Amino acid sequence: MDKMVVSPPQREDIHWPALIAAIASITAVGIAMGLGLPLLSIILEKRGISSTMIGVNTAMGGVAAMAAAPLTTMIAKRITVVNTMLLAIVAAAVSALGFYYAEAFWLWFPLRIVFHGAVTMLFILSEFWINTAAPPSRRGFVLGIYAAVLSLGFAAGPLIFSILGSDGIAPFLVGAVIILMAAVPVVIARHENPPIAEPAKHPFLRYVFLVPTATAAVFVFGAVESGGLSLFPLYAKSTGFGESQGAILLSMIGLGNVIFQIPMGMLADRSSDRRRLLSIVAVIGLIGSLALPWMIENWLYASIILLLWGGCVAGLYTIGLAHLGDTLHGSDLAAANAAFVFCYALGTLIGPQLIGGAMDLFGSHGFAWSLAFFFGLYVALTVIRILLRPKRA
Image (cartoon, rainbow, N blue to C red):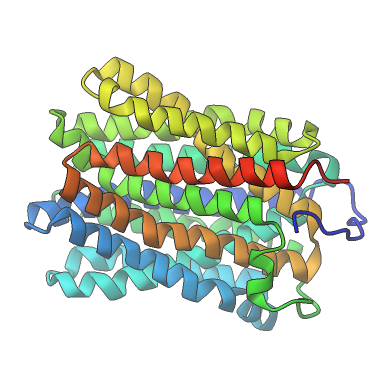
């Protein structure tokens, strides 16, 4: 089922303190993740860890997110959204700094679990908060702003990495401080704390299938984003780029996200059938993935295609999230946001392993072929659903 009829929220104005708190807090986390994912992969490679094992370690973040997603709403209902977010911020900051002190590779697995579990809670609750702060008629636009600023954080992360490098405590310390800064706007907006009064109407997994086109979209986005951020530095290095050049190329993906998110949100507001819009975005992602092996040799061509590709790919997230906010409200929206992030986490679990394994099996260009595989599957899904289920009433 792609649509569920519910009563609209009563308030039509934007809750600005909540909007600012959600955007600022998740942006800080975006910067830390954009910095941390390539940083950790480079350090593990320097220690002689294979691409497959790097992918497995990165995928532990997906395991943590899948475990945290069903628990988030229950915890927030018990101790409030704001308090849950503050606890998650502290846990994420401490674990981010912990990577520097963990010499043994096995210690990176529990650290990944703590870090990504905490970040998952921040994603779920900030998205729920911002969806409740957005008026229905401008939800896509507001979520476009949210996603654009989040993408700016992801783009800034690799740039910071290119400046700080992978040696010493500096990149870990900077990441932890940035995460802790996210607590400030959350505390300021604590009086806008969104209530979760009653339990959700359905079991958790039911929300995964209420809007299947959107949840499949965020699954693909999670696989591509997590695997891409983690393993693109290795792909760039294998094709002749230096560490800083690869980081700058990676930041082009994030920059494309920033440029395209608000237009994507506005298109979502004006679209009568978002499945078609999601399908178009996936086709662009497929074309970009297939073109990457031929473009990667030229830095300028590669940067242009990554800019366009990254911007359109992130539309899967923004459009899907806007659709979610239109169909559900209150505790159902909180539970659906958790299910949405659960699907994203499932993608982050599968994506790095498949992409890392493809690079070990087929060489460096296995990176691009595996990305194309994910997009091809989603294009097939959307085409089948459009053909079998014509435009909804």
